[in-house]
Image (cartoon, rainbow, N blue to C red; front, side, top):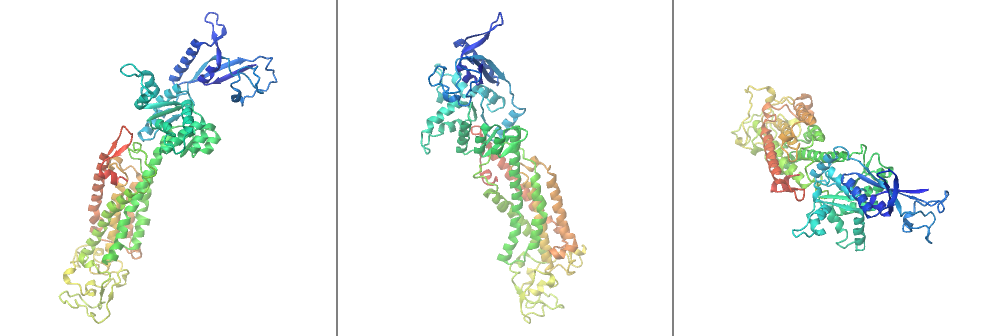
Length: 634
């Protein structure tokens, strides 16, 4: 019987005392002593294959003495590590199932070429550009691990690797560099699992609160390019823990049972679809195609979802200011309510619904995979910068557009801005149907019921008093406080510009003007929300760079415009919703200037954003320089 051993060359070679050699003349294979020269040649071949990125296995054998090992001998292949130090069969402490693991004969070395999957190098480079650090943890020997890491762009320059610097570089006087000097100079580092275990055992005796505990491993991980070779499952856990202690969000990939503890420990465990069931159960995510490039696509998709959620929230929040400010003005200044609650629902549940959803289909920005990962503890989905952008920057301009449109329409129908303040709570006298306004009469203004009937506030929330001339009702208001009606009876304009098709009353100097102004306020919000949708398509790029390729957003612009037209000009719903067929000069035209202001402001802001973002080669991060980028980049 024969013992055969297969494994890592550095483990197998030290157990060999002989080597099989083929005679060059006769071709006969014979055994000879595994001396220093043979050992050097075997290790050189192992290094040569390893530097080519090939996996190397050593094979050895030992012919057992049939007198000591009968056919029915029970070999213990599970507990051999416990009696590994017992060399000969004559030992008095020979346990049951023992067999020799020393004085083996080296049969040879075999190299396996297992090339990386296509485009893995491109994916790793994308990770680097995105600020995602890729650490290689493998069971291969260091030369093989370093060569493969270079092939897939994990190690960009092999000459800047720690061991290479120690082997090749010296001081000016010819003395070699110290470990600390080489460590400070290197960009890449390849750590053997045995060295990691040695460092960990030395630091294990330290107290948990000792600052030096785990510091060496964390110093390794701080290097830009890191590879761990010949690692064990427990060492993988140690590496994951060190990354998490440095504040990183750690994702671990693997497919075997040995990978499952590290996959479970990681913040994001990723198992291969063809891997073991144990690894799949421990993972948070499965790669069905077993391709590392899919992880990069997942990172890009995750960033896109996060970006689009931010954009949708920013778009939705900005309309809250023009919706709430009319009620604040109504309560504080007692102006007739510029926007009704029904029209607010028309905005939130109607015109804004499709545009907010369309951001889910927005294409990724060009620099989405060039940004440094966000800080999960600080950079939340909704932060102070986003609220400031939506409320204090865009929302204020939108509210200004709404109020300008409101005062503009009210002025066209006889109400100056000054007369509106306090008008909602002011009491007056209901005139008779035959009364005619006479501005020269300072006491009654032509109201025959002045000081005869009890004074009361005018009902501006319903159409019942829509025929009342407000100049007669509010007799205490001077004639010069009222504006001249833009479209009188003799004006050559469509009738619905002058008369309400709902109450059939004139619009000028009646509360019908308020319904028209409220409808105009609704249209103005839709108009400035057009610009809001355009500026929210990107967080720092210009709209010209992003383009209008999102068909859903284009359809949303069209659909909210058509819905707004439907709410205004479909006369069968006007009475129920409180909308009116407003004059064409009042439809969006007063708020177009605010549309342009929002576009110009945001494009200018994004110019300063892009100028304030500088890539740091030393840290690999984006530096935020300037007040604008630090305070407005949400």
